[in-house]
Length: 308
Image (cartoon, rainbow, N blue to C red):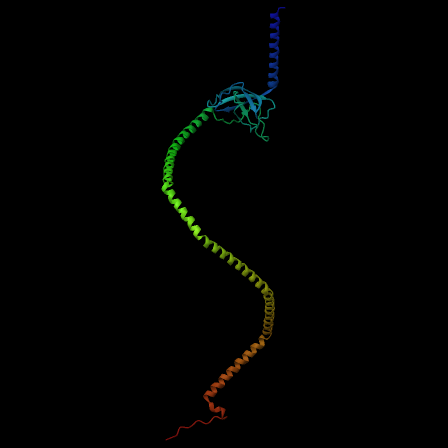
């Protein structure tokens, strides 16, 4: 056999092995039974037949058809097949996604809820619209327009601020010029001279304050000693006063008891005094009318009127 024939046979053998390997890998990945489902979107975003179906980010099947829905042309009907045993449920949501930035579009399905009912084969998977690139570009254009208007407004405000800053700097330059510096220097010199002249007086006042503070401390100590000395007698006097108050309280209670027990007798005595007072008043009136009754017992006869 020639050398060319050997090379050709080796190439054909290698191609056959590569084809068998690819078929085996595809069968291992997508082999087995699959379950059909469908979903509907208003924007497919370049999704094509053969695109990957991702369940929770895991490759679970492929898209078999992408076409306008015959019943509602405003929606895109997407047919897909997933591996048997993929736990799609009523809370699973299909939306347009990407495997990576460099890859084409894919159909992404969320895992849903563990408590939800499983979707039967051929059921419709709930969908959620994704923001398209056109909408993103439109929003970016609106943001850019707003940014341009904001930049123009900011430039105007910055111009006003810059003018104000220049005016402020000019005023500061005028304020901090040589005449102002001379005036400030003269004021500082006067302050230094005043401090030098008043320093002895300030020192004398400080010494007097220190002396007064010492006297105040001594006075406070004397007052504290006096209060300490008087505390014992005052406490004793207060105790004696408390005892006297208690004795007076007992005496008052005894008097109240005595008054309550002699209440009836006191009432009789008051009535007798009232009766004696009335008798005395009557006796007084009788003396006023017949004062001679104190001397004579018998009343004299009335004088007769002489007859003519």
